[in-house]
Image (cartoon, rainbow, N blue to C red; front, side, top):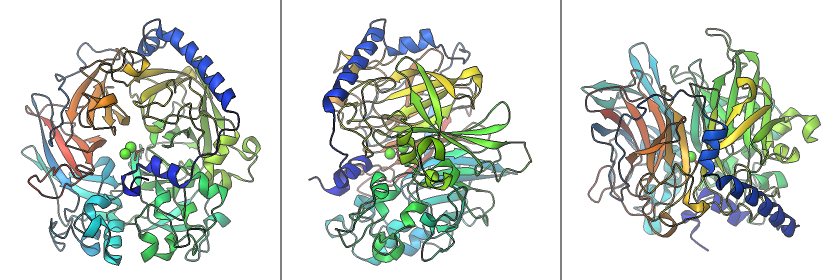
Length: 628
Ligand code: FEO
Ligand code: CA
Ligand code: CA
């Protein structure tokens, strides 16, 4: 077996908790083949993208010159590259202290538990920038810690004791920090009253249907209404009333116990919770992460958390009404009638795509606390022929006892109603110029091969058209009557990523993919205010075999109307590019660089032989013009 540290979150879950064996494998294969044949007949007309552009043209108005840059090539260098006329600089890195009382990052020790609690966390991911008067506040997720780096100075790269575990723990959570621009250079403002770390011991309120349910009660919180910490937040969302949404993804790996025979319930197994844990060692320093000592703590994670970054004393709120799964991001849309709609993916092989619709309506300046607490939760079912429906998750539709249980065991509820198993739904983004929504389906080596952890089949077809999908695709859908609360929609594929230099079949990608713009594993996704779609990758950076010529992870821009995609940025070695937002004046684009040098190759951004560090960079035009 590979070292567990080398496995992706998805691979790890399958090693510790293999999906059920197929019970009717022939039937699955037959169904997959017939769907694929249907799809091939579509492709014969001139690619999947052509299907999108002819049958479902984007509502976005095509501007004559959408791209204000010339595409760049791929790169395998340990550097950030941007187009001619643009520049990039680092704003904040893992370990940069937020207060002058804390030490600067020490490359030899790589910090301590105490220094890490007062410094920028590791592995920045989703982020947002908020203006408050003349102040600018950045808040970001610190998804997880790179154990190979944070403990890379230890014998065998392993933690040596309690403080190493604590350092790893404190590298998680969220970081809020005031930033300021002078002469085109952004820096953090140390000691600002906005600066705040949300480490895994910060108290948060549990709201919504699951609050106070027996499954949410623990020894430390017998009422089931207050939890410590939010961690493994991947993508994010932002509300029209100015709050930040952090989205808890692979929360399962932080729970473990010394007793490897400790029995897990089927519900815990569905979420990949296992006595093995993932190697973070939190159960060694805090008993609530020990599965044998605290049965319910894991039920209190896997949610969307609402945070007010502009009020440093505010208490974050876990919004259980938005369901519990491995959240990627939370794309918030104000529907025409004022209801709040949130689109969300569950990033695991064969899991689902969700929608939340508030019962109340949003009015600027009005009450907003109930909008993410009181509403209806749905899951998507796609037909192969281009239609789809949202299935509401209720006790009646799922056979489950209550909305509380549905909000805690959302995956099980979605399986019960027969939702479509997807190729790992990542970020969702809504086009600001049209009622259409896009979602990255990053890859899925199990497509057509294995069920998901709940035993649901994963047939090839519909928005998941390739067996053992290595490259990923972006699906988009348009709600009926441009109403985001409508229960029906039409869908197509915006792009099928692929490698046309290696494959001449469907693995070469759709017509809008060529040797000049190819990429794999789309993950981060965000529209800018002009309706240009920015695509970030978390893919295979080997630059060989199936991925030959694709180089390091990258960021591209896509025109929704024409399908054209151009490469804008390439990252340093072994990184992922994830997280995107803009300064209030739209003259700076902030881009996240996660886990550079994660496998020992690369020293970005400090160079030499120094420790690689995740960081947020600012990208600007040389002429100071608008960038989105
Ligand atoms: Fe943290 Fe789904 O990526
Ligand atoms: Ca991601
Ligand atoms: Ca990732």
